[in-house]
Length: 104
Image (cartoon, rainbow, N blue to C red; front, side, top):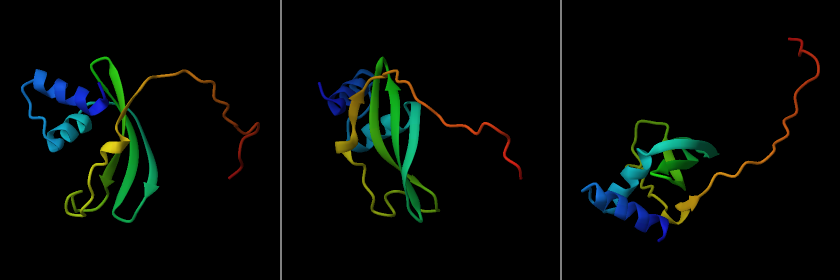
């Protein structure tokens, strides 16, 4: 079952609609695990989000509007091609820190 079909079944199980708009609403209000902004524009940012629904994790790209308009006002649409299931994988990460205090 692909990610969108899983969302549809999740909504059906809760007596919610399965329209694209309602599925997007389900994603936006799911438990947020991670969010990274990867594009900045004047009136909106594009973020990659990972959310948890039941015991599954899903990635998708999301428009975060920074002005007074809504996503629909700016004719931006949810990109269903960015939705897919992901899993947590532990990796080692090296972070470089100064060895002395920075003088201001």
